[in-house]
Every structure is written in C-alpha cells, then in structure tokens.
Length: 512
Ligand code: NI
Image (cartoon, rainbow, N blue to C red):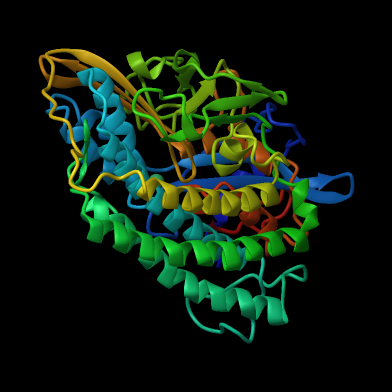
C-alpha cells in the first residue's frame, strides 16, 4: 500500500546535485561528496506513527539499477528519558509503555526487570508466568499484524479483489502473486484482524487491558490467578495456535517459496543480537525460552551490557557520543549540523547488529538461514508458533490463588538494567535512582538498532546496509525497497524517498 507524495522542483534539484557523484558502496562509503550536498527533511510523513523517513539513491551498477546510498531518518524526538527524571521510579513501568502502542508490554517488562534489579527483588513465580503470558499475547498479535497487514500486501496483486481504499493506490508488479494465491491471502488477511483482537483479549485477562497493561509491577503482576481466567486464556490461545499452525505459518512459508530472489536480498550487516526473552525461572535468568546471545562473523557469542554504546555523530544530540546507557545522556540538539536522525546509533563493540525474530531464532538454534528478507519473514512466523505452543505449558504452571506480586519499597539509591525483547527485537532499559527518584533513565529500542543512522566511524545502520545494493526494476514502483524495509518490521511509519541521479524523477514516498 503505497502513496505518492508531491514534492517541489527545488527538492529534486537539490538532491540531484547532492548525489551526482554517488558510487556503489558496501555500507561504509559516504556517497554525498560534493560541496552542494544538503540534508533536509521530507514530509509530511504518510502514516499515523510517522517518525521514520528512509531516503535512498539508486544508480546504474553493472547494467542494473540498484541502491547506492540509503539513510534512515528518525524524524521525531522521543524524549521519554527526560520526562522520567525526578519521578517515582515505579512510574517508569507505566510511562515507558506510552513510548509505543504496538509493543508497550515489552517496555513494561524491561522497566519491571530494571527496577527489580535496582530494588534487589525478584518477581513471584506466578508473576513471572503471568508477565510471560501477557507478553506472549502481545508477540502473537504483533507478528500476525506484521505478516498479514504490513508485509503481505507487498507480495500480492489485489487487482480485482480489493479495488478500494485503503488498498488503492497500490503497486502492481509482475512478480506479485495473483489469482487464487492472492485471494487466499486476502481472505486470511481478514481472518487475521479477528485473530489479533483475540490475542489482545487473551493478554487482557492477566494484563487488565491492552495494549497498555496496568498490571506489570516490580515484584510480579498485580492481577490474580483464578481457574476461570486460566480456562478463558487457554480457550483463546487454542484458537490462536490453530490459526498460526494451520494458516499463518503455511502462508508465510508459501510467500517465502514464491520469492526465492529475496533469499539473497536485504542481508544487512550479517551480525545478529538477541537479549533473550521469556524467563523460565525467577532464580536463573539464563533460562529463557529464547536465549541471549549474538552472532558475529557467523560465530555465536555471549552478550555483555557493558559492550553496548550509543553514538550520536549523526543524531540530533549534543550529549557526549560513545556512552554506555548506564552513563548515557539524552540532550536534544535539533539544529545540529551534519545530523540526520533523532535515533542514536547503538553498537556492540563498535559493530553493527540486526535485532528481531531472525536474530532470536538463530541464537536459539531454531532457524539458521539468511539473513535475508525472506528469512526474516519465515523466522517471524515460526517464532509466533513456538511462543504460542510454549504458552500452553506455562498456563499449567500458574497456581490458582497463589501470590502474584511481591511488595517492593523504593530504595534511596540503586541501578538496574532490564534486557528483554519486543516482537521486533532487543529492548533495553537502564535505570539509576538517587534520593528515591529517577536520576537517569535510558532506553534503546529494537528499531534504534535496526534503523539507526551511521555511527561516528561512518558505519551505516543495519537497515541502511540491507538496502544497499537492492535492485530496483521499476523506479516508479520500487516494491523491492518496501519488502526490505518491512522485513525488519520497524516500529515506525516509513517514508522511503527514491532518487535517480541525473533525472528529475522519480522521487517516491512509500509508507510502511
Ligand atoms: Ni514499538
């Protein structure tokens, strides 16, 4: 579902001049080399949560049009780190959920974990299981949303099936699935809407409500466990498991088999990072359904939070660059010269990492192909099924009438780190308490890892690298770029701006 956006002639001319010397690169070259180079905002952003623009330059390389430069531009200042200062630390569980309406439960989890470390407490067993069940419901909802409602329309031609808004205007490229395959995916697209509602209802049983749950708390979960709640949860879960196993996984794998070219498109950095998620024990936090780890140059490695640093040379921040979030700062500087994004650039030992379902499934040993566009789509569907199946067993661990939340008092001082996962990748919260108030709060979201701008040494972010070299068959319908961007499931609306050096057209704004 793409829309074209008007632009001024001045913008086109400026970009033409700025990129006239573009050369293909593998992720570290800066093509904007002329004195006329100019970075500017393009808008308005075309979707409701619109705070990410993606601007690419395409050029002829070896007889083929392909991406020779890419920039991810976060166009909105989040600022939650500063909103939280000097507040009661317990507010963080609820305020940080407002960062996002799609993955708020992950923020509740990360915040609860960070505060538990600072408060020196652990959650109750019931609380641990209930939080996993609520987060699992959110993952299932989010993965269904991504495949059917955000990604699948990139792969099917719905002409003659859905000739109405919001499915028009649309791209119709020759490689898209048509006929019975398209009709089947459209039918399941509609079923998926109902399934997402059921996933929300399921999570609300222990979450009180969704998307923003009021029941997460340091020490556990404030809801109670009753036999009726367990029965109601299992009934919805069974429906969702049937849908995932019999409909979504087959559909995702069918799309994967129809687009073999995308097994080599959108590779990115090749490095994968997962903090791990769904603790299976309150005492051994290494015991998780999806393990913590990272893949560097094909080798599985451990993760240490001290190796994470955020760089802001190209971000609109005047705070120091290269800080670990435990000593991090968030000082906005909207007029900063040379900056092009409101995202910082998180790096692990200075290396660029991709996060998300593929990273988690790879680290856990469940899926080891790629990285590529198709592997991200396949791993996401398979992960949804794995989590849903595990949730059925977790329901058996709940103790009806048992304690769900441990009392917690706010200490005078303390620090904590909450490393968990959102549906779209690794999420970390860093907390520092002084005088029983929040004196520092830092958040690194998964989309900061994936959609980061260049770091101080000029390394492009994961999604920028994945766009590099992507062939574009028809610059008036650059569906290839949408497929690459969507494969990361960015938790932002996206506008991709396309420029062909030497020509006034096309520049096309895409939305996620
Ligand atoms: Ni989000």
